[in-house]
Image (cartoon, rainbow, N blue to C red; front, side, top):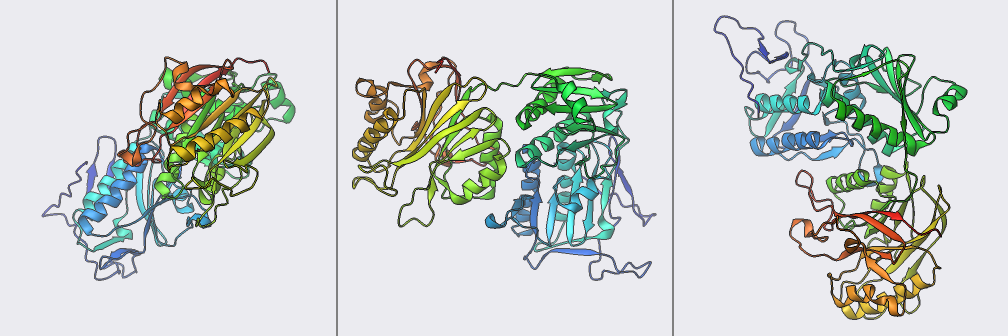
Length: 576
């Protein structure tokens, strides 16, 4: 942690400036007398936040939903420092607004980073470079904004050193006169577009996009801040971000004819036109891929100069090439886990993925987070006695696939009766299936998703027999079978899938269809587990697997689930 030491002169009883390598920070000149809120020189009332009083607080820490891992860790550092030194716990939430899961705007918030709150947006507008930060009061909120993740860490470290470590236990007060900022000299930047430095640009994103594109745009802005030192202001086409030049994402001032001419028969383009940078595509998914393309280009090139008229084609892959299975541990839904798990899905962006233990609040959350690109199918489990129903859901990329048909069946001797189960089964178990058509080629495939019982092999054998009968009855299509089978590799249940071809469809474990494979566990037990029970099986002769990967990692100490996501990349080699 950086140390900020206030040097008090015996001669001067006034505010001093602490100089950093590229700028300066203004601190209070002496310990504060918080017995009054009046400025002794002017007699005017000074705004003051009683963040913690007598060990009690009504405040909540808010960070951006799209925070980088460094920004997320910085917010956690703030909370941990308050707990350690002042003895008070302050909860952390994101700026996501969703009343059903308790995400609402609070009057008393500590805004850390460039959140979507109006107070953060206003404060961030004053920043001019990636090394800038500002700590201020807005109404009853403490606002900490910065031009980059590194600058945010610097700002929070400064606050912790000055007001938390040196503070009084059970008490935290911040006054208007304590506000401080760091504004180093503007950087010229290493990215120029049509002869203008990146610092003269803002970002304009289409108003028609949802959460997934919003997060992708925020990630892009964070990338620019980290790479070139400028935190670009963002707006939509109906508002102004105050910048002379713009990076237009999916929306631009060209006429529809001009836009169509520029894109032509290409999926997407990145182009410099009329002094602006345009990221355009024939659909939302193409625009999403265009953002990734420009990030890759800039990351690989270092200093970049994009001249007027420069245009680069973005080749978007509309062919099915990936799948995932993920048990989300739906009975627990802390904000940290929900955000991290959604981030894992965004990281891999599978063309289709099956979820297990997906409760209603999880379904609503993932639909909000991913609905720009994904649709989903699957009925609820309908088991009497559960406080919440759960869904055996399959999500699919609606820009790659068209939905042909789907259904949910119960793994019992009466599969079409909702809530039915074998007496040997501890829980109601089911499977969801979906018949998808690849839009680019018309080829079809079936994705089946399931979760076998956890009570014992007797129930699992009976459920598996029904499951294989169901798959056999779905037609002669390539099959992806994903799920939590509650059975280890090479167990009798596992072998019953692999060797089912004598009486049923022949399926292979995708793990052993490629040399490019992980050998890690799929069940982590939130850090303590160590077994492989989640699989993606593929029908014989229909797929060429290029990669099998188990995402066995936590994020800033948070495990997304007690299971790891299992992800595969493949080529569909059948012509059906």
